[in-house]
Image (tube, rainbow, N blue to C red; front, side):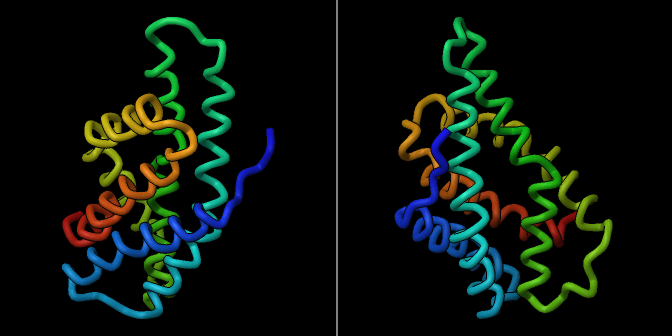
Amino acid sequence: MKWEYSWPNILRGAIIYTSGDSIAALLLQEFQWSRLLGLALVGATFYAFEIPNYFQWIEKKAKGGRGRWVPLYKTALAILYFNPIWIARHLFFIELFSGQAGQVGWGLMRIALYSFLVNVPLSLLGNYVIQNVIGLRWRFFASAVFSALMAIYYAVSRVLF
């Protein structure tokens, strides 16, 4: 498998993930430039590298699969990636770049688990569309937009849960 890490994905990751989180931060009156710049860095590095490559792996795993179960299989593999640990890591980055890394603890995992469980129906639908309707070339973009919308939810869930 050839690793994917391209300038378009770097820019998309930096801009789209930052946009979603910045909207959430503005809604919560928690906007900080360090958070914006930090999440731009995370979107341009971790997410721009990990997600397109994972999506390629999903496509490779599902290739040759037959029948009506392939779309559900691809969706399930996407959900396995965007799990409570991924959400907790995202929340950790928010805390880190907000200058609150000293307050990070197991509470983030609880918040991530609740956030994941509450949004399972929406996440299933979003990931089904991303994995089965959107072409591989545009999946990272679509996933980043979906994740940016979910980032608003995750940020707000910090207060709700």
